[in-house]
Image (cartoon, rainbow, N blue to C red; front, side, top):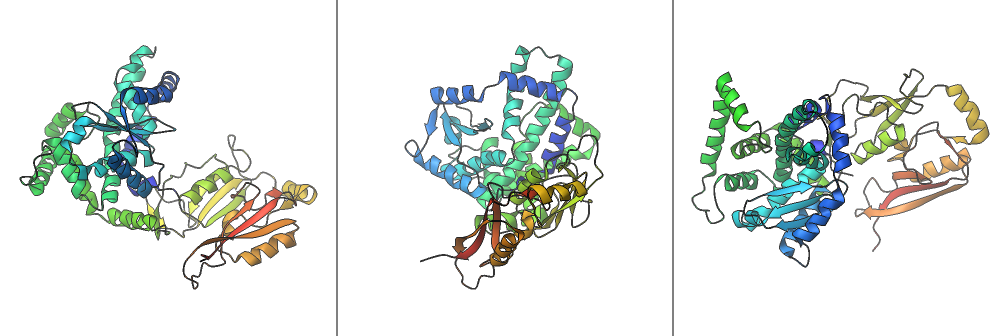
Amino acid sequence: MAMNQNVFLHETDRAAMDALKAIPGFSQVTKAFMSGWSEKMMYMENLASYVRISEDQLPRYHAMLKEISEKLGIETPDLFLKLDVLPNAYTAGDTKPFIVITSGLLETIPDELIPCVLAHECGHIVCHHVLYRTMGSWILSGAMALIPLSAALIWPVMNAFRRWMRCSELSADRAAVLCMGGPDQLIEMCMRFAGFTKKVNDEMNVEAFMKQAEEFSQFTSDNVFNKTMEHLRFSQATHPIHAVRAYECRKWTQSDDYLLAKEYFDAYQRNEKPSRLPVSWNKKSFTGRSTKETMKALYDLGFEHIALTPSSQGSLFIKENDVLETLINGSGDYQEGNWIDADAKIELKYYLPDSSALSKKSRSNGISLKQSSAWYTGRPYEESEKEFVKAGFRDVRSEAVYDLDDPADERRGRIIRVSLGNDTVFRQGELVAPDVEIVISYHDIRKD
């Protein structure tokens, strides 16, 4: 199961990205960026100009990154060291993200805080920030001037990018808080960036810094003039103010959302199913996508109780088997970021124009499946094996997955997944050839 980024996605991050994508001209700017940017060129520059940190080069930092990557469920990205007196770290790329830290960072931040910095950068990867942050950095650096697009298109996008990049930092900070087990290291990291050097330790007063952060928050909310001054001073920045970052993280750790996020994160580390999951889609996210693609996405997020409901009421842009509506426990009244029970029923209404034609076709060309892939999860494997054979399938076998330690575990003999050929996601009523290979995987006790 992949880490669900909504566990720590900051609400302003989501809103700022939605606002960015809604700007007229954003798609043109995106196309211009993709045509002029090269991930391979960035990677080549890293190899040529910086030091790649690995098991053989500064191995302690590589080990830190590997541990953080495992906690967040991502592939360990490449890590590079850049000669630069300014303390900094950034993540870039797309299909193969990488992290760069500066020599100034290692001079400013003590080694025990480096995992916090790396967790922050990996948080960007989990939140799928990396391509857009790379794009934003590229645009804000002036590279868009080389492409013939009008200022009327570029300037609104540039301003929106700055705001979103500031907001995205708050999400990555939350990822670091979860990895570090609390806000203390993130707050100290902000204090180091704000003014404390590596050598100063005993004289650091966290509560005094937090009082400063609270005073700033109060000052900017007192009246319109102060809020305007804040906007004029910081609207061109790509990172939020250090005191604000510390204040936001501590405030989050005092909320119910943090308790839910921590429960999810702790269960994820134990490779257990969390009792509650965040909703990482809105009412329109899956509309127009195939049922197979949508079901796979929901399974990957940890949801198992997924039902498919056909409907002949489609629209001009909806194809057969595309999702029309997504309901949670029979209701469409939910928002992205809400927390729901992990065993909630997710219903996908999809377009099926002519069920009578489907029935006729099933009699002549294949066997119509009686249940969807989601229906089999958790059922006794022997019963399902018999049902497939009885339906007329000729190549059915069961396969144990030895992942349980307790002989009394109630999951023993229960189905993990059913594969039809190469497909692990299928819908009720789908036509399948009688000779397709069907593999039923189920839980069993580990062998000695």
